[in-house]
Length: 125
Image (cartoon, rainbow, N blue to C red; front, side, top):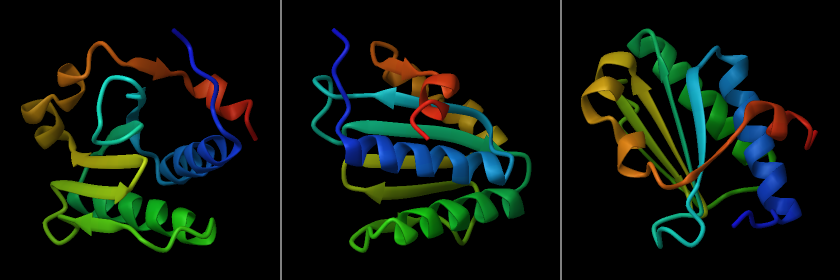
């Protein structure tokens, strides 16, 4: 069943998506986990082609959330640049180095989640 999004959810997902696209994140997936997981409402998964790009992507996402007024969050893994986990409470962002993403295949664990399309997210702007 397709659930409606709150204005805050739309705003945060839109800002996150654009922060990822600005740094050329690859294969961006936004998974709607509402009703499936108690961990978060949304997982955002993407990858970069280098460790430096992974770090730049995660920096840009963090800046987007900070600019949106989100102050309480956690970021782990930025030092290595292979898997940066960014927990913004309802939205958890995973920025992988491409080989780490293939190895962990995180999106396969949530195959029953609805995937939000980029054009749907773009329409929220």
